Image (cartoon, rainbow, N blue to C red; front, top):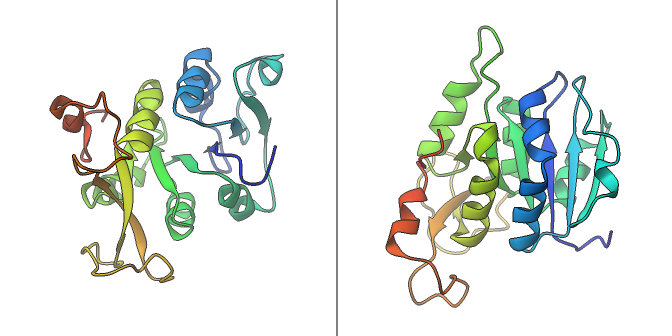
Length: 200
């Protein structure tokens, strides 16, 4: 795939999150990605189940998977959008790289503190929080109706263009009605999906 081709990375971290992998390996998810302009999908499955045999040869879009890598920042850097488990390391890595971010918390983990962090960052509009069966809708919303705005680490909207500020975290905001990047078929009802969103 070309280095600049828009794509999506799904990551589950060092354990397993089979529900997220299964949702990301569906034809529906691939079709929604293609409709949103993405050209590739790469899934990191960790210790969990791999996508079904032959999945990476199906169309639409180029697909691949792997278990672990020594260069997860490099994998994230190549992606236009990251769909991540709720681990703090993965979330902060994606935000530091200024990636659009959809997070799915693994609710099967005992003593799970992932939800608290993810909910706080969702409320500050740094990410979209979804359940695995909702990631297709979450990806469409993140891709079509939001642009990034620089924010400070405290979550307050920063003035001016600070996209190169290493201290800034990306933040979702609604595209104004006059913005040519906004889809023509978007309706006021669409923006009921603004973070905090209805997926979680």
